[in-house]
Image (cartoon, rainbow, N blue to C red; front, side, top):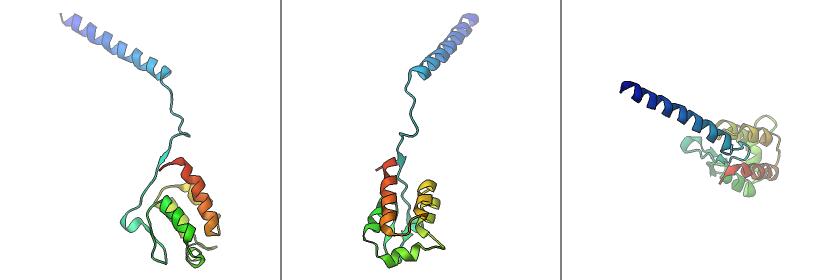
Length: 124
């Protein structure tokens, strides 16, 4: 009787392995390029605080803030020596690619366009 139980378990394991292989071949594979990224929202001290008091916690809020941001506020955070927004995007929100593109911008309108384009890969 012990032999029969072991044989049944062995057959069941082999059947499970075969089923997994068949499913792996038949199941559609997800294309990682088509997968949407989750929008990261900073909280508390990780939020971006602009010089005019605006508090930004994610890329959607940054996009919206850039639309009405005064040039003086943008210029304070973005210069030839620094780019506070790009640093925040990279180190807090974790989007290194967007941060690299953002570093190349010198105007709020251009920066907003870069963000609008990038938001297409996010699930919002």
